[in-house]
Length: 121
Image (tube, rainbow, N blue to C red):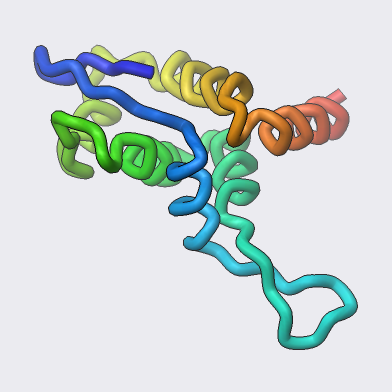
């Protein structure tokens, strides 16, 4: 995925490295096993994106741009999102679409999407 911000094109990858980095941000308990946790950052992030969490949108974009050249700063992302020219709804849709198409994130994204749709109908 690419975004042009202030005339600069930035690349965002929703690959396995993105998945690993994002997953490490949240550890959730494993049911029935005391003291055991598993990574859960991706699931929380996807759910947050479906709920319209703008702060999580910045986090996801920041993680997706890690290791890319040029590297976008969080402040640049925040300014881009704050800009009246940015269609925030379209940006959420674009990010969720890429998450739904990436091999590393597709399965969980589609599961959460189905659950969101089930709860809203």
